[in-house]
Amino acid sequence: MKTTALTEVHIALGARMMPFAGFNMPVSYSGVVTEHLQVRQRVGVFDVSHMGEFIVKGKGALDLIQLLTTNDASKLYDGKVQYSCMTNYTGGIVDDLLVYRSNENEYMLVVNAANIDKDWEWINRHNTFEATTENISDSISLLAVQGPAAHEVIQSLTSYDLSSVPYYCFVKTSVAGINDVIVSNTGYTGAGGFELYVLNEQAQKLWDAVMEAGKPHGILPCGLGARDTLRLEKAYCLYGNDIDETTSPIEAGLGWITKFTKKFIHDDYHRELKEKGVQKKLVGFEVVEKGGIPRQHCEIFNAKEEKVGTVTSGTHSPSLNKAIGLGYIKTAYTDPGTEILIKVRDKYLRAQVVKTPFL
Image (cartoon, rainbow, N blue to C red; front, side, top):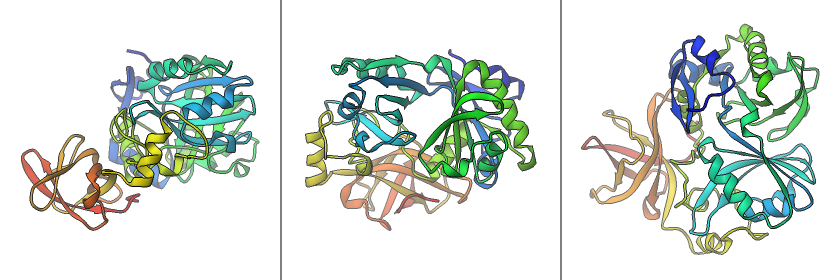
């Protein structure tokens, strides 16, 4: 198993560790619900250094990114971040990712940990544009400081006015005496905050500084368990669950990052889905009776007990105190308010399709 620069720190803090995407990662420290509510109400910090980072630069960098990704990277400007995805040749998604523009000839792509090798091969296979690519994943650590108090915590560690960094924008500045930290107004929790990219050798210094600065707010280290419940309350897609090599961004509700004003891999297929309509859609649901929590692969049925879909993500929402989830359902049953049945351990649970985000 791979480790991050902070693995020993997590172990010393008593984190419950488990394998994730080939890494030994912390799942929780003080409990998922405690960490979840801390982030929603105050501030928490996640080590997400398992994520992958690629540099794409040179004259052909933008052309390569435009071919690979569904969003329109030509709309980016220096210091801007864009959410996007890469499509394959069979109608699915290679990965979802963030695109950072440093300047017109240099970009950073941030990809999912489990897909680093696959994405790296895919990008280079399509690099006929003389762009230069570099995989810096093994040298970069990433801290996600999330929650309503995250701005105050990070601002106390830098002289840069972070209020001047809009949502989905970034700066490179000094933080906690460490030069060239990328401070990005992004996150995967829907609670606000920043993601901080730093060289591995500076990771513990930054972690310690963030933890110290966060003490007045009761900052807690948080694990992947809370990261998952937080993202699900905001109905953010998780690769491998809600999107994968078989799902179109149009089916997944990601039409807003799928721009047909330019060419991208297999764009005709996704354009046809948008124009003619899809057979299934990713929707949110709430369970309206007690009896279990739907998990990935649970089957979804209509009132006549005919199968109409499959759960992709499910959890007990700490903020709402109810079971929620996402799943692909036949389009006829996707209107908010539609009653559905979800099979959990040979029992049908009554649920209802709802608008997302849940929170």
